[in-house]
Image (cartoon, rainbow, N blue to C red; front, side, top):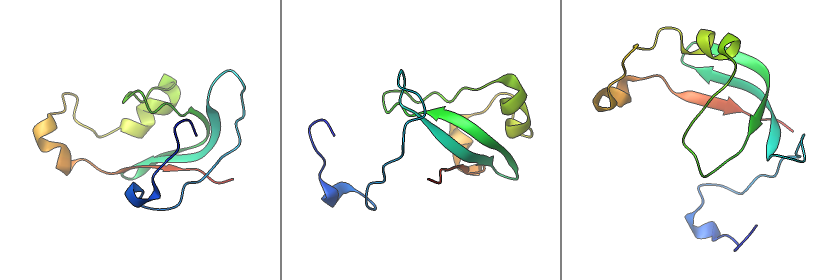
Length: 88
């Protein structure tokens, strides 16, 4: 890793995953779950410089079904957890 890491500030040991594309930091993602909804067998680009999560409409629409159309950040703690499952 560029610059190194300080394990004192990590919640657990670092994990390393094989890239599936050489032009992006792309890895295989087994499942994304948002509350009761999930999608499987995906590819994801790992980018620590953004907070955006995007995907094809056919994947994203069923995943976010049931979320408010105009979310309010003041009620963010009432939203379901989003979980990314990545298995080597």
